[in-house]
Length: 294
Image (tube, rainbow, N blue to C red; front, side):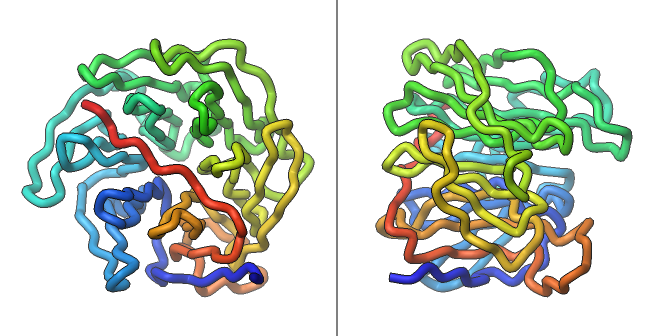
């Protein structure tokens, strides 16, 4: 079967991101960060419904108790799209003007990991942090500051956690050992330096074989990296800035990809920039995404 890439939501999102497939409702949730929108795409009907959050919203996960947990410009919130009810859980960076949440993922036990970055037009600065949100809504900060937190994903056995910094000078993916019982990462080390390829590391996911799939931001590509840190597949994209990859569909064999519609080179033209794409025929599948336990 040949690999195909199709634009399934031609929406020209300013900064599409945060894609999560929920097996429970068979839908793809994603966000437009700059528009402050939370989207739900239903492949069965082709409908893409959105909810206006009113400020930058960057990452999310479905909750066991219903609704979503989301990372925004003002912190970590619970949100019920059906009722509009929202609850602020924590704003750990209230003192850092211009910071917002960026990438996020749940671990095998339902904790929500999310990272921050500065996004106010100022020169790049190392003041992004990774946070773990536990089921009891406690928040723990981890690791020294980075520029642009990204690439959070977990190995199939839950014993490795991946993360990245998208900054154009750093552009590196790291891996660390992970204790699913305590939620503690350790022994972080370089997994892959993307200076060797066209795209910088952006949103990521892991397949059933333990390979790390990465959106190659600025490189017109999606890349798969084996557990030992070798590139073994590259899928060319019709857009310059893919932003987040996530396996979904009934058999978890479709790779969905969000993208950015602003700040493009303009050469060549890319009329579907900002759209959501579906890649078929990859011959592998993803893992069910764990819902947030809190």
